[in-house]
Structures are given as C-alpha cells and as structure tokens.
Image (tube, rainbow, N blue to C red; front, side, top):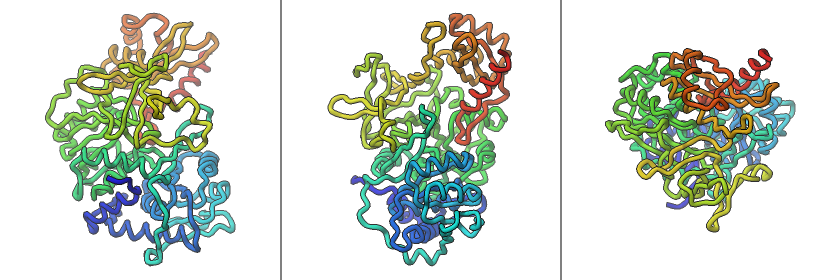
Length: 519
C-alpha cells in the first residue's frame, strides 16, 4: 500500500459509514458527515485570504473544538501542535514559539491562556466556537474567527501535500529542562495504522475510549484507529475514566485503552469487579510496563476481551511492538511484567550491549523502520539518540530488553534508571521488582535522591496493604544493604498524571520535601 496522508484515514471511516457516529463528547454525538463538514469549515477559516498555515496550535483538549481543530489542521495542510490546558501559559507559549505555531484553535478550557499564547507565538488567527468567549481569545489585532457550517462550501484543499510532511508535533520532557519537539510525519502514522488496524477486527458499531490528553501520543491511537475503521471515538474525563464499568455500559464501549497505573487506580477503588467490563472486545495497555497481576485483573473484569500490551516511545510513532493474550487463553507468563512482544510490520530491532555493539539478546532496544521520526525539532536534541549499523539509522530507546524465544521482547527497565550508591551500581527497576516480590500486589516507585550524606534510595509503595516496617524486613532478605531504600513511604493509592501514568514528577517533589524536612 502506498504512503498516505493522515486525514485520508478519516476519509476511509467517512466512506464506510457517513451517517454513523464518529465522535462523542459528553452528550454531543457527531456523525462522520458532520465531523467532516465542520472540519472543512474550520479549514476554510484557517486558509482564508490565501493563508497557508504551517503549524496550528490546539489550545483545546477532549472537546468538540479539539477534535474538529485537529482534523481541520490536517485538511488545511498544516501540522497540529497540541498544547496542555493544565500547563502554565509560559510553557505553552515556549512550545508554540518553538513549533512555529501561526494559528490557534481554542476551546472554553483554553480561552484564559489564548491571548497570552497567541501574542507570544505571533499567531495570525484564532479559531473558536460560539461556546467560547471570543473577547478572551486573542490579543488586539488578531482576528477571532467562529466558523459556520456554510464555510465548508468555500474550502479548497491545498495542493502539493506529501506523506513526508509533518502531521503533528508533540513535546516530551527534555533532560535540559526544556521540552523537546517530536515532529511526526504523515508517513510515520500511516505506517503505524497499516500495521495496527489489521490486528483489530473493528469498524462501524465499535466504540473506542479516549482518556489521554491530546499532548500524549497515545491519544492518536484512539483517534485514528477509530476514525480509520469507521468506529466512534468517545472522549472521557479523568473522573469518568476511573469508573470504566459505568461508561463501558452506558457508552457501549468495545475498546478500552489505558495505562496500567490507571487500571490499578480503578482497582484501588474496588471498581474493577469480575465481569464488570463484559462488553469489551479489546483491552489495550501502553505507556508503562504492564504487571501480570494487573493484566489478570483486567482479564477477570473483561473475560471476552483480547488483551494487547503495546509499546513505543513518541519518536517511534505511538507503538512499535505488541504482545497479545487472546480472549479465553490463560495468562501463563511467569515473569513479573507482560512482554512487549514483536515489532510491527516493517519495523526492525537490534539490541546494544554496554560496549554499544549490536548482536546481543539482552541490551538497549534500538529500532528503525517507517514509523521512526526523522529527528527532533531542535537538531541539538538528536545527540546520542541514534545509532548507525548495517547502513541504517536506528533510534536508541533507552529501554533495556531481552529476547525471549516464545514471547518476543521482554522489557527490563530503563537504561537511565541505573544509579550509583556508595560506589555500587544499582538498577532502580531491580529494587522495584524486589518490593513487588516482598509485598505482592503493591505498586512501588523508587527514586535516587541527594541528601547531606550523598545519593540515597527512597521508595513510595501504593496498595498491597503494606506494613512498611514488615516490608523493610522482608526486603532486607532479598537485597544487599546498599540497595535498601533509606525510606519506605506508604500511599493509599498511586497518584496519576493527566495521562494516567504514575505521577513520578509529583512523587519526586514530595520525596524531596520529606528529605528536606528530615535533614
């Protein structure tokens, strides 16, 4: 199949079921034909007066404006740049400037920041719906357009677009403290969809959950896997996502996609009873290592669902490997976490040992293929992230894996999780593994922090009914003294980020405060 533009996958869904539901946001449901017409109207506003937008900022999230704006940006030949509604305006302004945002889509949640971000980025036009207060939409001199459906008739698709063009730009945390821009081309996403859609027997009548913010690339899985098959995308708030049984039932969801931490938070609320998700056909995990115990709890809750564990950094476009437990098959893997499985069609892998030589069966995972991005928005961020071998360029994921003859790739932790404690090399993942063994059912996070004595280990432990004194004693039977956390702090439940991952940033800050108070 030839390479395609990302919006052409939406057109596939439109052709399959034009009158069927494409999008549900709260009580609003729009058909494929309605989404298409609104997106064309907004694209007409973006290109009004011969403008050729290059990057469209989405200061909107999980709203009708957000999804219409995303598709409209693609129709207009621009790249979409999602901005976080909960991020400070200064950070959004920095991202907008770095990405070269020249137009802005705003919903009610983004209106308070819109003028500041628009002014900082130098945008030419702000688009909003009539539900948004236009007075707060833009600085003086920048027009606020409220497109009407009639504008769709004036839209003329731009010429000269190619699959090499950038479809969207996402920003990830950078080691320098400045966010790194990751431009993903249409061809990258199309390669993912070509490899992934055949794995799922979905189409009109299916309904995908959408719990991730648009700033998180896993949101693109839900959006374009749904739209590329003619299924309906159902946006869920954070609170709704913590009550999946209710919304699987009331929304008729058939595909549930979440991080393991989000599922564990649901379990901590006793909201994942056996059989409670009986309507699901697929349960998809990504974003973090998937504990086997979490997978078994989901299997009990959704007995008819196939369980998919997918893996991939943003730079390799959504997910580049997958491991499936078909419905009805026992979860008989003996490891602690579910394997990440086998590469998608077209993707190749190799593993680097400590000497940076390929050919290992355990080492740092490197991948290449049509899903690999071309490089960061700022080329300075490319340093150390690529490896040359066999005449090809490979992306270094920073994840350690081993190759299992039956299960494919097994995730072993991050290369950058290795620290030195009193001269000893310590893998934080190994300490977390020992904590899980010592307190089955717990969810640990371990940090290496500096105090007046040097670098020390501290750990938070959620769930599992952990008695930290007894846990410390059991841990001492499993680890040498230099690997024992100096502090074990219990949590009723693991705090989550907006994207459903364990909130490492918040817990790290909490740990630093506690260390400071005890010094």
